[in-house]
Image 1 (cartoon, rainbow, N blue to C red):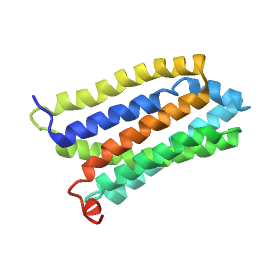
Image 2: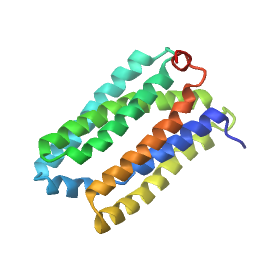
Image 3: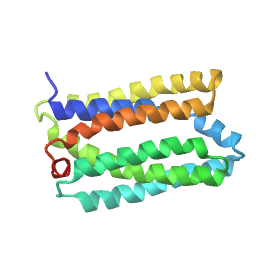
Length: 190
């Protein structure tokens, strides 16, 4: 079975995204502690991400439902994710961390529901379970590998190098993802 171009594009770019994003994983708590955060600060930062993401998932889903803007909204989410990933470099207090987490929540809410909608649109209905298995399975595998890589980077280098590496991978993922805009009204405006 061959994946069509758009499905491959969505799958591979999300794998890159998971590689970049997954590097922080369990190191989030250690980073928060290094900038003066305690257990409650970590809790607030993580809760902010989840609540912002959850509320905006619903809103973005409602606003984009039935419109032909999913690819554009998804790419904007990827761009914002890249920007906020690099923003970790400037975090020096728990309050800054909460702001970055809120920004990442907005980015996730723009990119994730629209990614799912596009993936469903381009899936092969004869192989939909397998194609969704690829999406979920590869995300878990890549995130697991990313956590190990992130641990090595922080152990032997620094959090700054980790955030730079994550950001560069996010740039590559975003640029790759932007290929889906070919043929969209947004792409034709340029």
